Every structure is written in structure tokens, then in C-alpha cells.
Amino acid sequence: MISLTILYFFEKQDIHLFFNGYFSPSADYLFTYLTYVGDGFAVVAISIGLLFYNYRWTLQIALSGIVSGLFAQFFKKIVFGPTPRPSAYFEQIKISLRYVEGVDLHTAFSFPSGHTTAVFAIMTSLMLLINKKRWEAPLFGLAFLTGFSRIYLSQHFLADVLAGSFIGITVSFSIYYFLYKTKFIHNSKWDQSLITFRKK
Image (cartoon, rainbow, N blue to C red; front, side):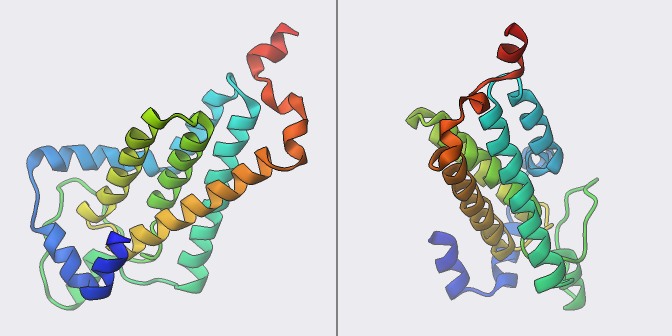
């Protein structure tokens, strides 16, 4: 709601220029690496790790990551097309941005943010699966910071990140409902793991 309010009252270029004016060497380092939490490899790595804990958890993470990623790519490549990312957008209007050294900047297919979609899909799924209050703030915080890293690194605008978070959250809740609130829940084999399977 805060992001929607900001987007309602301010132009996207003004919002981005505001955030671009605040930086530090430690933030450069943090966000350069934190942004990879939203990479597709994170979905794969967590899914593989969860195979040793619970198949249903694995499906939750894997399906949430894959389905939300497909939605993001559909909107990015087909619906909205090659919309310019901040580096290309500001170059067109002859305004210089401050960039983080060593970051490979993309120039097109800005909306929505794929990394933000992935990280919110992962973290929302983990919040639903763990279902403990003390984990909610850290997991949401990690998703929030990863999404913000896309703005900080000038890979996306605020609207791109907001849309990505919405897709990730919506898909995760839908997958969770399918896996835990339908007939799927009655099949106990999905609550095994590679470890329990081998023991049998």
C-alpha cells in the first residue's frame, strides 16, 4: 500500500532518482550479492535441499518459483514487451544515474521484476510452510531487501518490483491452497522425504 501510494503521487523517474541519490560502499556490496537470492538458481537450490526434508515442501517451493516465473516472463516478454529499464530510460532523457561498479546492467524487459517475483514466491512459501510468527519478519525482510536491491542496482523501477512481489505472493498462496487444502493433502506419500524413503 505504501508503494502504491508513492506510485500514485510521484512519477517513476522521480522515485528512481530519489533512491539513486542514497548510496554507500557497504550498501553497494550488500545489494550486489543479495540480489542473487531472487535468482532462479535459488529456487532450484532450496527445492533440492528440501527433498531431504519433505516432498510437499519441495513442491511448494518448486511450483511457486516455476509458475510465478512463467507469469513474470509472460507479462515481461508478451504483454508489456521490451519496456526500457532504468539505465536505458534515463539515457534516453539524458539524465545520468549513479551505478554500482561491476554490475551487468540490463536495458529492456523491465516490467515486472523477475528476481522480485522469485524471492517473494520463495519467502512467502516458506512463511506459509514454517507457520511461525518469529520467522515472518526475517523472511519478509529478506524478500523486501532483495526486491529493493533491484531498484538500488538500477535494474528495475519501483513499479516493476511491486508487480513482481504481487505475482510471487499470489502464486505462492494459490500453490499452497492446492497442496494443502485439496485432495492432495490426504496423500501422505508427499509428506515423506528422501531420507524417510530410504529408511523404508
